[in-house]
Length: 76
Image (cartoon, rainbow, N blue to C red; front, side, top):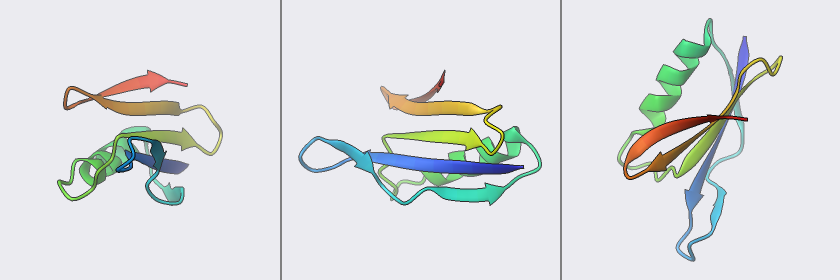
């Protein structure tokens, strides 16, 4: 199944904006997609503030954000 990831960051002016263009990849399960995207967003050189993860059929539609250094999920 295809999943699209969008990452956002806080720019130097304090505004939240896209970090990269949306990225769409194939994964066998949503858990596999979450694990791969978690590894990317937890990399110390990637200043991710939040992200969205959406499956091609929209059965998975999540927004993840950092609060006090911990990633939390909110279903869209």
